[in-house]
Image 1 (cartoon, rainbow, N blue to C red):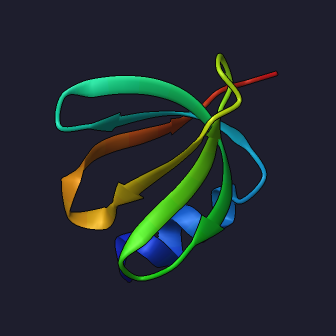
Image 2 (image 1 turned 60 degrees about the horizontal axis):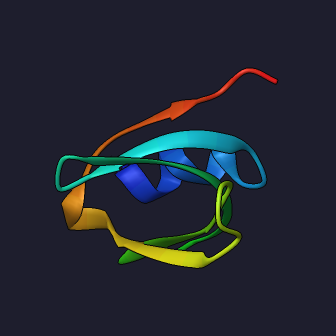
Image 3 (image 1 turned 90 degrees about the vertical axis):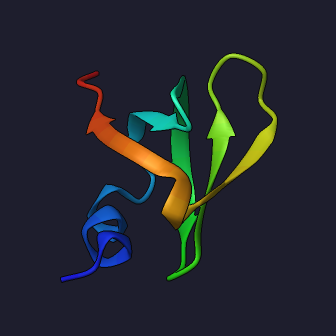
Length: 62
């Protein structure tokens, strides 16, 4: 199973994502095979994370 398929389970959830060693808290709004798009919880900006650059993703409990 691909990373994108696993991450689809977290659609609309708040997660901690690490990309190239930088951790950010986002809400996942779109997942495709090449990238993940999310809204930064702190700034409200839309962020795009290429799948190949993702170190880890962890769901945050509300």
